[in-house]
Length: 129
Length: 360
Image 1: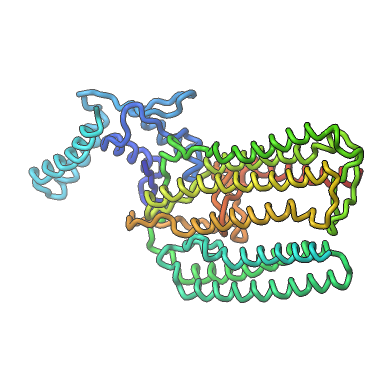
Image 2 (image 1 turned 30 degrees about the horizontal axis):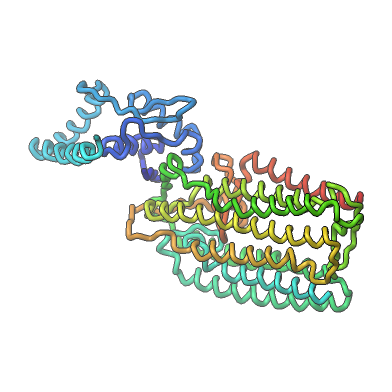
């Protein structure tokens, strides 16, 4: 999996790394049990401070998307759940409020959401046994 | 003496050839150690500096060769010619630095990085599924070392009581030692040390950090995987040839053979394999897997970490081994304390060898 960070972007580097790993899980290129490079190795490959990668991994761990252990390093643990986490609902709410505030029609917003969901779901179904 | 002069000139020629070829095989986004965006790779300033650099290197090479041969002819000291190689390397760096400064000045004056998105790309698969260490390529070096040791053990009883352990530039032995396990097998120990050292470096190369192009990370990752594997194989091939040369030298020592051609037994396999290694790596160094992809990112402008365009010092970077900025292969991050310790170790080892040499 390719991870790219834009050094001039407003989004912090740890957030960019976290977002790309989440997207890779959604796309199915990272599945339950997939290994991620150890924190120090990934930091060395990026040529950035170890704490930046540690922060990204820590966010993913708190969200239950990876588990960290001394023996196996970082491993994806995409949880199968039908309950939406509270923080996700809050972030989705902000994004949808932004769409409404910009005057986008509701069916246009729903269609965009459906297209994005399909792009993840279709790949994941193909990748999952 | 003639052989020493010829060997010195061959070495001088190889270094000169390397100096002339390296700018062509180095990545187009780091001409003379200056990081530039891909769209400026063919800028007139870069092209003009490349031409000037080649002319300067050729001129310096010619002057150094003539001065080297003249000094040998006047003093009769064949060792002056290998020393002139060091002078050539110094002038080579001078030519490099002049081009480096001019391109850097043009980059800063023209604001070449303004408005571009600088980024870094990493392929996690290179860590979770790294290129395999080419164990099969280690086999020839190990086999030659073991064969040398086995032949030595068989020949030991019939070896002369006094062994020539060092030859002068004219091929005549200049150091004789009484037969012992230490003196008879000194080159076998050297074979073992070199095989372990270069094998270790090859393992580090396979796991080193690749320099991925953020504009086309997939293509450059594929290239990096191939290049790292090739680099490891080239190093293992090189150590096999060095071991072969040492095997030949051991046989000369063990049979008491004295020949003016003796230095060639070690020099020819080593020079040939160094030349082949450089050729293989250089041929694969320029085209870094372009496949039409473009993420909109460009390399980050990291010139401030490269002192003089060649020495990498970045305390924030946890990597110890990084791709070389100019030329082929890898270098150390001297901002990492481990690099300083490694350097101190090498200096101490050289000091120890020199001290032992003078003591004996």
